[in-house]
Image 1 (cartoon, helix red, strand yellow):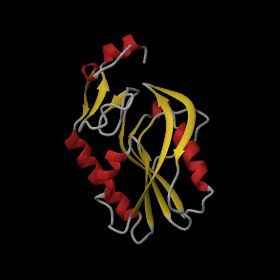
Image 2 (spheres, helix red, strand yellow; image 1 turned 90 degrees about the horizontal axis):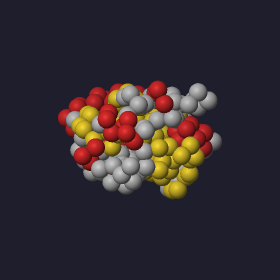
Image 3 (cartoon, one colour; image 1 turned 90 degrees about the vertical axis):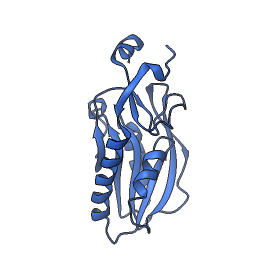
Image 4 (cartoon, helix red, strand yellow; image 1 turned 60 degrees about the vertical axis):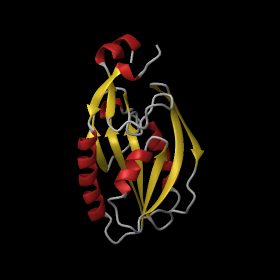
Length: 185
């Protein structure tokens, strides 16, 4: 089934997202005060969220990116592929991984395992959206900073995509219930 924006409805408005980001940033600033913080965005989905979040963080915060793939269309493939790695060492630093959404947790579990051997002082996880009901039983992922816990719905906008489209929408949209049933999601 070919999906388009007309199959979606506004789920979280931009104003609500921005207010929550400010709250999260306040907590992050307090938790990492005086520390050597590296904000690591997981491309491509996190770039909008990360840009808005890091503007609230201390100016000494450095930024880096990873690119990880595990989705095709609306479904997770169950396989994690690292397409682009960090460009700076994280040894002796505090790392804040910034993700758009955590679904099964497989991607973050694999990524955190991979980064844990690089000698960081700490690795924390920050996500805009979390779907805990989709977490796999054998996947251990602790979210330190969560924007919104959501039910199992397919979402896009504000960095999240459908086959590369709709990342530039200011709100988060969810697939309409009747379309979810028809699509078998």
